Image 1 (cartoon, helix red, strand yellow):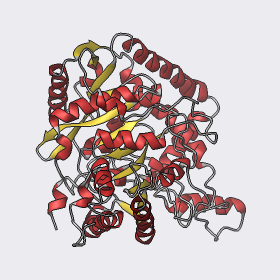
Image 2 (image 1 turned 180 degrees about the vertical axis):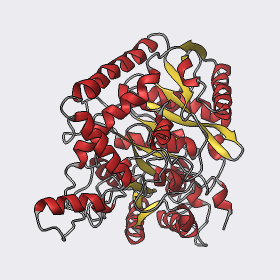
Image 3 (image 1 turned 90 degrees about the horizontal axis):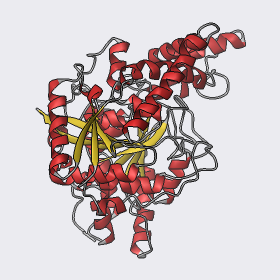
Image 4 (image 1 turned 90 degrees about the vertical axis):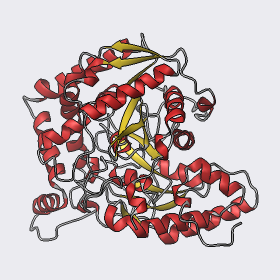
Amino acid sequence: MRSKGVSMELCDLTIHEAHKGLVQKEFSSRELTLSCLQRIDEVEDRLNAFITVTAELALEQANAADKKLGRSEKSSPLTGIPMAFKDLFCTKGIETTAASNILLGFIPPYDATVVRKLKEAGVVILGKANHDAFAHGSSGENSDFGPTRSPWDLNCVPGGSSSGSAAAVAAGECLFATGTDTGSSIRLPAAFCNLVGLKPTYGRVSRYGVIAMASSLDTVGCLTKDVTDHALVMNVMAGHDPLDATTPDIPVPDYTRALASSSVKNLKIGVPKEYFSAGVQPPVKELVEKAIRRLEDLGATVVQVSLPHTELGLATYCVTCHPEVSSNLARYDGIRFGYSCEEGETVHDVYFKSRGRGFGMEAKRRVALGTFVLSSGYYENYYEKAQRVRTLIRRDFEKAFKRVDVLAAPSSPTMPFKIGEKRDPLEMYLSDTLLCPANLAGIPSLNVPCGFSGNLPVGMQIIGPQFSEELLFRVGYAFEQVTEYYKKKPVIINQK
């Protein structure tokens, strides 16, 4: 055990590097945790990645992890690893706000299933990460606690909705963080922050205890520094949960085994032509095409495919998502929990004023649009038709996967954009264009870093059939090993 001062580089380690150091007694979990807490102190006033920091709890958990590791007991690779939860995850005894004023003061009496699993694995909880309120957004600007900034460029967004999770991991404030992905919310911030982010197959990870956005689209995952870390975390999070009826009773493989056979030789990789349309910015297109050629150099066969209903994906997503948002937000009425306006003379007054003051503009917009779509006379014209198109989108993917093993495409059509740049909500929604089809189809999609334009990162998504996470990790790991973009650190780390 080292007796000297805490190294400021510990917080920049990957999970597997940190686990090796902990097991070999090169440093303690307490030192590792203090390194993360010190990084938080240094950069948080500029990033705003956390809503709540639980320093005292983190040190208690780190001490417990050190005792367990000191007894040489069999431990999880996550034992003693500092991490953060997106503030949509219910955490027993820790305020959970969904980044919205309407849930200020809400302290859950129970843990989400993912929280429980990670606690049992021995993680150290540093706090709750900032995000777009109720996960409504693609930039992190819709949080009632202020926007999160990118550690790569403080004038840019880190992507959303899991903005704080991505910024915190990229800046070394934690070694990994949880996220949710309804239309892009793990993969887009992963792309914007040079991280690995997986949208798992729908139902692969339990949503129990995670505040819902759109229940037929929501998936739970995490953001990590490399593919190996992601496989380690998914080994813990994935699996059937009796408390979530959408989780199938399918065995969870050891995802790290896929990394041992990381060759992509003889794999067929499809390139959907619709994902390289005129709306994709030149730097993004060039870097992703270069990445695909790199996979070809590694022995993969590249095949052009078509997903003809891609252009309808965003409209289908919005017409599907907003009604479900409206339904899920109905429970926040100012009466049962969270913020309540006490000025109303009637129950209706309390209800109206509480929601009016507690919800932000984006939540109100989605409630209004969703309620309109579900209203009499419009349900058949909008929501019902969207579900039909959703089936066509899923069939597009199924047809493509009869020809190829996986698909490779840009994660975002654009480079990370400036804070305040996209004031038009419709323009903001376009950020999800290339990512939301996978949510509509319920299939997994993995973002991996694929290069930089200037100092800003670009991500490539690898898409596979249902429950093909092992294959996605295999492809992502093979690409990662010959490029090592994940090793580049953001500029904020060197700005004291």
